[in-house]
Amino acid sequence: MKIQFNQKFRQNPDFLIKRCGYGLVRDFRATEVSYSRRLGNGIYPRFHMYINSEDPLVLNLHIDQKQASYQGTTAHSGDYDSDYVKTEAQRIYNQIISVSQEISEEQEEPESKGFWSSLFGR
Image 1 (spheres, rainbow, N blue to C red):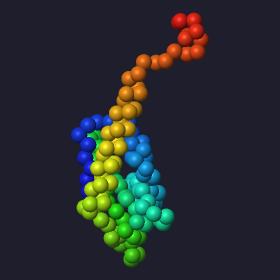
Image 2 (cartoon, helix red, strand yellow):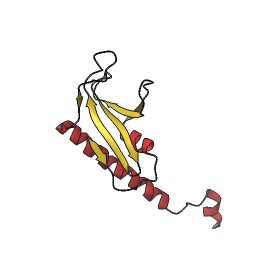
Image 3 (tube, rainbow, N blue to C red):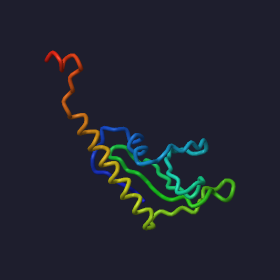
Image 4 (spheres, rainbow, N blue to C red):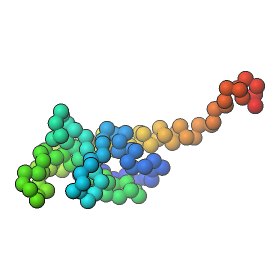
């Protein structure tokens, strides 16, 4: 399932995705960087996500039900359009928008004075 954002973010997509509870997948056989979030104690099942583009941000989300069964194949019993995936996609969308707005508001606040400046008014 594709998650599309219509706005640009000042934050790095890696940072935004990690704030949603996803971790970087280190698979040396893969050609793309991906992120996952486990659904239990084991590696599978897991939500699995790729960044399709960064400007504007487009994410590709699915569930890997199990590891690829046969050597040399990439078949992994993926689930792309279930209600569970749609619910997670909405959660990710809301979280990224929320985190981006919080950080933007923090950056717009005026600089606070230091300890000595607050005492002596400089």
